[in-house]
Image 1 (cartoon, rainbow, N blue to C red):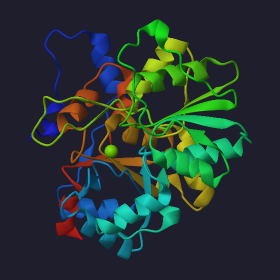
Image 2: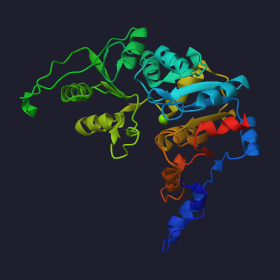
Image 3: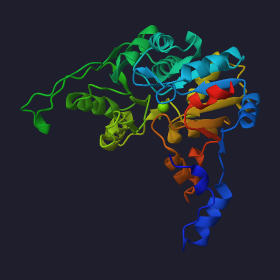
Image 4: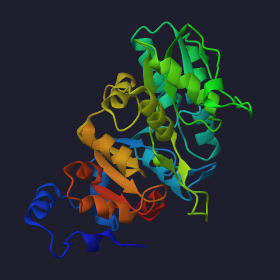
Length: 333
Ligand SMILES: [Mg+2]
């Protein structure tokens, strides 16, 4: 495993002064929670723990070893827990079932998937038309709770003789928004519909999740798995329209959490995540300290690259604390 500490004083030979000045101005050195006094000090600083799910609490359908025990111990210590995930594939209730099955204590009002944030957003603006989803049932079912109709979930095959000029899909005149999340049944007809709906004047284009990629299947690093950010980028490229982002790292997602938990003080909260470009930036955008774990998509090598970057924006991705996995806290709790 690469130790990021070795990168903190690293300067490339021949690098120009401007690059070094940028690095010095923005450089922050994350704290490795590798001893008891640091961990105790860390725990003293926070009342609210906002945790990402995929890559932090679980990998696919398995809990990250030792992490249910850590989260339940933190809860028993009186820490308040929020599950803040860009995953929109399930409803709040389905995530509650999954967490419980994997050994995590939880309550429904602690769960904030982007299926929920999307439904809350559309309800809050008085949206009264239909939604077309490039996504899974979680988006559809959360929208239904607010009385918003949603189509598009499920597989739609491409006729084998289709050329671009034959992509004659049926469009619904009442669709007023396209919502994009992870969709494991994405297809060409679905993209044609999504682009056509987004292209209509005044229609909304919502990215409930714009993560670029997902972790490779175990032991197969050669496989690169595209995330919903790939579909968002495709629709953006075709229509020229900008999406409304409703997940991490954007502020609206935190506003929705605060609506149900108005007692959160960002200065007394920590955001835990495995994705530097969303979880850490989400913390920075909302004045919340961040803890990076490399049990999911991001690595210490990625963190070191952001620490040493000459692009000021990259420094938003640098966490305040880091650990290999939350399991490492078990021995101190
Ligand atoms: Mg994650």
